[in-house]
Amino acid sequence: MEPDLSPLADALADARLDGYLGYADSDDSDQRYLSGFDAPDPFVTLYTPEGTSLLVSGLEYGRATSESRAGEVARLAEYDYHELVAEYGRDGAHARACAAFLADHGVESVATGGRFPLGLADALREQGVAVEVLDGEVVEEIRAVKTDEEIDHVHEAQRANEVAMAAAEDLLAAATVEDGVLHHEGEVLTSERVTEEIEVTLLRQGCALDETIVACGVDAADPHDRGSGPLRAGETIVIDIFPRSKATKYHGDMTRTFVKGEPSEEVRRRYEVTEEAFEAALDALGPGVTGEEVHGAVCDVYEREGYATFRSDPDTETGFIHSTGHGIGLDVHELPSLSPNGGELEPGHVVTVEPGLYDPDVGGVRIEDLVVVTEDGYENLTDYPIRLRPA
Picture 1 (cartoon, rainbow, N blue to C red):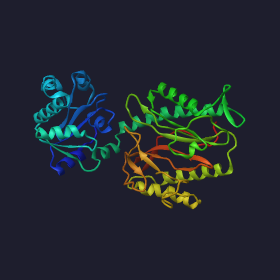
Picture 2 (cartoon, one colour; picture 1 turned 180 degrees about the vertical axis):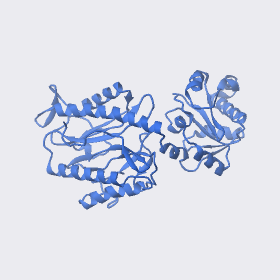
Picture 3 (cartoon, rainbow, N blue to C red; picture 1 turned 30 degrees about the horizontal axis):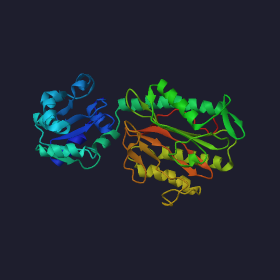
Picture 4 (cartoon, helix red, strand yellow; picture 1 turned 135 degrees about the vertical axis):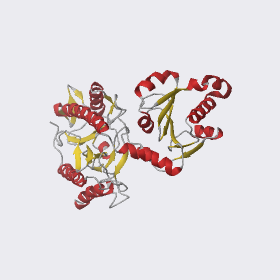
């Protein structure tokens, strides 16, 4: 994958800076994106309009040379790093080695992102390097427009997600009801048991996740409550899975809401209205449309049906109490946003569409698919049924 970094080059030119400097491990998505390198320890990435260069430890040199997209990889040892550590300590040595590395590339001034380490920035300034935080979210905005290869990576993660959702739904479908509580193979079926099934299934699909949501009843009325304890019949069970591919590091994201047993009329109504809001969001999606407009289409449906939204009541604690969706890629939440502040959508933007309704007296209902904006509309990257009753 070769991303188009010309907007970053333009931003550097506008700011009259020589390069863009990153220092982080690859859990920082901007760092991984610019370098194309996956490393557990922090390393230096320098971008200039002439190319991308890395400064890494000897331990990572071989992999960085063969796996990163950098045109040049240098080792700390080339800058007498170990001798500098003895004289200046680890932090001081690293700043001096980094300053020498920049000098070798003719770089006297650099832009950084807002999360760049303050200590290193100050130490570089002491070495005569001008360091400025670049205005805006330039790298994240570049990352938001996915290449075909990146879209494939997201799609693969979503395929794994579908297998995991099916495993969770199968547990619900096979469960029996005893005294209003779900049981599976003679044991109480809990959020934790369903979560375990999801996690094991994802590992077998080459994905992992730090946490997921399997929330029932009152727990489901909080959009980010992970859920715990026994699952109950007649109550909504919100399952939200957002795995990350272990190979590519790209995410999938999907939510389904199920009821085992007989849902109440209000739950049925909320589910039907949420499905209508979901379809309204999809109908609104397309290039040139703003995230605000997509979010507004969802609010229109809910408000017409008498449910509160943050648009109609900023203080509400029930109803539609979050944005319609978010970008997804190396981060599970990234640009663009389908929200009151969402900007213009472009082909290559990959976003979730996830309207929902929440009330502790009723539970929560949310439906979420993952779609990519195309030249003439959108493509849904999710292939999983939308149904209230587990089957």
